[in-house]
Length: 331
Image 1: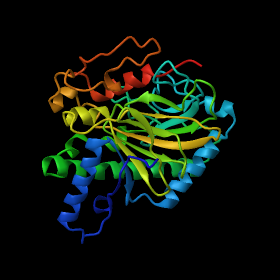
Image 2: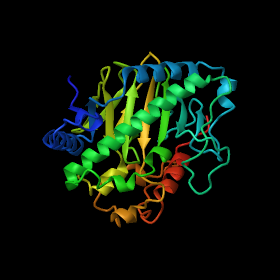
Image 3: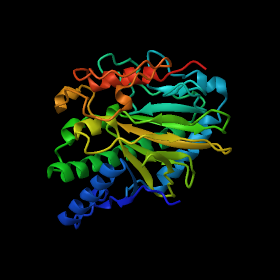
């Protein structure tokens, strides 16, 4: 069965070609928004991330996960650096289900060794001492490249919705410093386990670079699950809950999951965030009653007692730190 997810060429926004005419950008912007309105997810061609950058990052990720367990666990996610470091197998889940994966969480590379108590999303990355600097560089190159793609998409969405490419950029002036990359190694399938439980993403935009031609990412549309399918040289992009709120539901944050097969695979997921201090109230949000159920409002602790929809005055960054704490598990 063919994938219901459309392919959109976004090169009009990702190239430096001065000959790109305005009509091409407008056409691309409206095509992108049409896909994000209907499915909430899109396959990107013409994204501008060089094949060498993708391949180097994927190979470096495999070498990172192949390090001895003790080396990885020395840089494990903790309560101080709550969004950076190693995620051991089984220690993260968005539901009561076991998620059979391990991961590394990283972001903007800062030389500071001091924990940032003002902005908890901007802090030092944690790499195993035995992971070479060349590998760190390859992963950081991918992070920077994907952030640039998200800024280009933000321009396109602003143009289509508001007639102004810069209309949403005011919310994203520090996005490249506060966004979060998760590098996952999905392990072989086991009874009752998933790679990622059904969920919507909490943030602004999400970009996914999977192993080429791998399967497992599924999206829930028309009351059933569909394989997304992502061939080489394409990226997956989807809306997050914050963007759904910002656009009053016009753009959809899709329910999706990751299933497992017998083959292990790696994948990169960039969670592109707006500025840390942005509140839902800043973008005119006062009530979620007229919005669909979103993971942003869910209690995703293991007990999972219900939804909390009165968070409109909280800073976006603080909400994210709380959400990441909710999905941490003890194996």
